[in-house]
Every structure is written in C-alpha cells, then in structure tokens.
Figure 1: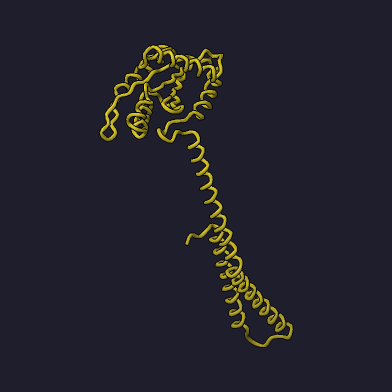
Figure 2: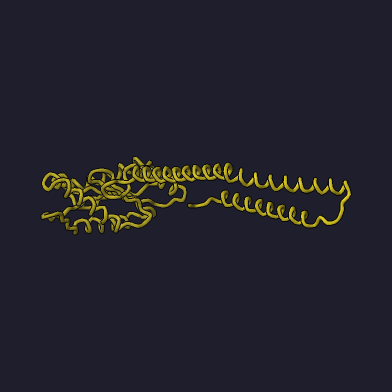
Length: 263
C-alpha cells in the first residue's frame, strides 16, 4: 500500500508521542524507586501531585495515540485516496481533451492535418510573416481522375492511394511546412520563406514522386498523377484570397492536361 507524505508525517508524529509516553513512564518508575526515607507531609503531597501529573500525562499521550490511529489516520488516508482519484480523473480528462483536440485537427485516414488546422495555421503564418516581411508559398494538389479509382477498384483502394500520396508529401516537405488533406483527393502545402522558383521546383519534385508511386492493394496495381496549383503570397491578401489564387492555378493545370504544375 502506498503511503502518502501526510500519512508518513502523521506516523512519525505518533511515534514521537509514543516516545514521550515511554519517557513519562520511565520518569514515573524512577520517581517510585527514589523515594527513600521519611518525608514531610508537604513533600508527600508534592510527590503525590507529581505522580498524578505524570500518570495524567501518560494517559493523555496514550489517548492521543489511540485517537490518532483510530480517527485521524483513517480521515487522512481517505482524503489522500480521494485526492489521488481526483488527480487521476484530472489527468484522464486532460488527456481526453488533448486527444479530442488532436482528432479535431487531424485527418483520420492519412494522419495529416485537416482543413480546420490548415485554415487556422495559414492565417497565423500570414500574420507572422507580414510582420517579418518574408515570403510564403502555397501549393494546392488534386489527384487526377481519382473518382475513377474509387469507381473501378473500390474505396479501400482509393484510401490506400490517399495514404501513399500523404506519405509522399510528408517525405518531400520540411518539418515547419504545413501539410494538410483538405478533403477528398485534395491536399495543400504551406511552404514559409520560399520564393516562386524554389516552390516550383519543390512542387515538380512532388508531382514526379507521386507519378512514380505504384499502389498495390490485393491484386490491384495502379499509378496516379496529381495536378498542382501554386501561389506566392503578395503580403497583402487574406488567407482566403491567397488560397483561391492557388486553387485557380490548380484548375488551370487541370485544363492544360493534368499531371502538371501551374503558378
């Protein structure tokens, strides 16, 4: 059984009381053994009074020890046990809150950040980079003809495609980039402190890496491609207009034949 600090301190206090009781008993014994010779009436009265005081002290110490162990210690133990349960409940609730918040900001299928996280993080990045006057790149990616993958091979295969593409994006991006699945087969990458030439190179590397993937699920082996739209923040526009500009470039890539990057 685990003993709480307050319980341990109480036990030490009780041991000290027992020690005091033992010393009192020893004093009574010494007093009894050292009464020699005739005593005057006053001395006898003082002696008797001292003995009564010592016996009363011993009785009070004994009663304190008994009361402490029978009443106070159970109360301390119960309070410490209840406090321990409350602390455990608090930890569990805190963990559940963190898990729920994580789930609210994470895409369950791919483990990436979701649209809610993307929107909030993009706004925060723009506020910070407006202050330090640095560029931000944004790419919006959409898998080509993904509906036909689901229609032909089923959603299980489609889910595996999404997971493989998500892993590819994580592999090619930096730790401080925001990589999110916006919904369906659409993804986005926020690349802070990146100019257009570097963003185009990164986007094309990702496009080629996705095209090189071979997705296997059961007897199915297939290839996918992605179209990518890019935009560099003009340091004035809102996060919504910034995203719309990248999304417009994405649709241009779709119109021009897919499996390409447009800025």
